[in-house]
Amino acid sequence: MAKTDDTAVTGTAATGTAATGTADEPSSAVTVGRAVKLAGEAITPGASLILDGKLKLGLMHALAAGVARAVLGPIGIGLVALNSYSKSTSGKHLYERLSQKTS
Image 1 (cartoon, rainbow, N blue to C red):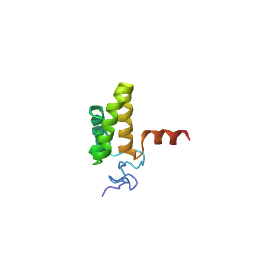
Image 2: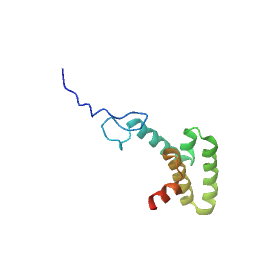
Image 3: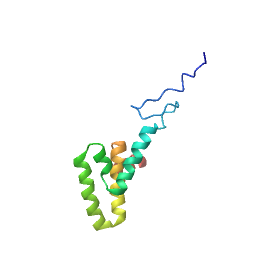
Image 4: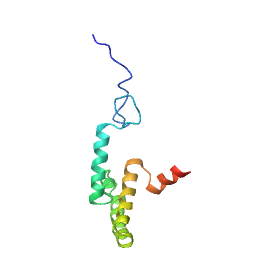
């Protein structure tokens, strides 16, 4: 019988880590899910939140993108989409993540 390395299989889908033994590496299912969310944000800001089932928050981001487009142009849409994606993947708004990094 072949000897196996017990430390190689430590990740789980629930934690979003791969089965390679490193906690920082997302599983392929998490990576694909994030790619789908990012593609959705490119089409409609707020899509990642809608995919998470947070319809109200996702629609608010879609409306905010319309206002941001009128005020800031494409940069405004990008900022709203980044905020939506950040909220969907980390649970924190973009400004919360940025202030966390600087403090």
